[in-house]
Length: 347
Image (cartoon, rainbow, N blue to C red):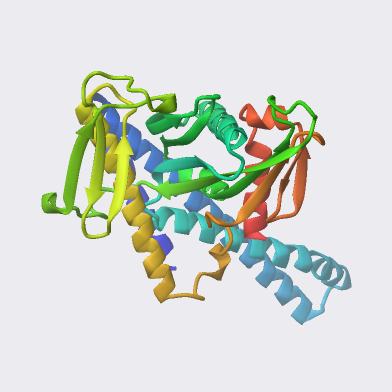
């Protein structure tokens, strides 16, 4: 398998780099190389496990063909079905790792959460989902940075956009893209009636510098005073930034920081991620039908999950599976759901 051979070669090169004493003084570079080493080790180990499984299958086939030892033949017949099953699982896992390795989506993602139907209750649930992802990020040692937010008067947010960083963050967060529905009795509801609200989540891979090229003439940049809930100005200086990408008409804003330059950097990060997503969607349209395995995992318009508070139940509609303990999950205990979604994707 030429791809694996190239990975093994890259792994050997990384081991040589790590043996360089001068690398210790460059912590940032050392961290990047070490993470790459760990990731390549996963691929090599998985491929070796697959090779051993295939070898056992061939050995059992040889025993069956000779028919010399009835006891060995019986054992081979008994073992083959589980070996074939294991081979299929390993092949899918290896394919998934190789796809992660090819993807520039590794490293950072930009998560956008927006209130949908439901008014104030939807805004409150945006805040709940932001808390869930923030707590989950802490538990997984993901670095988080808020790029833009629009707080709501009642609490929560009309919209919040943030970045998460780590080596394989996209493989963890990609399942969250879509419409999240909440069913609960709002604090303001006196009659005890259950309301249904929706929130949309988009998970965008953050492109690397070589992926998206933006010319200075492509951008129209405006500065204005940041506003808070109700529209009142919260800064005296014009620190908020609005960037319009002329070729596509995409408009992004950032007002989180009190510094104009940092807001501009945040807005550019959002713009680049949206441009990459636009480019990927256009490419997918050209090769429609060739990536059926990804259909339904990250569409914004698709209702992916319902949070039913009266029944203390979260249901993921893609895999038709439910969990209890809503409060615990909204406090960051998202691992069980992500693990189930990963398993379903590989099956």
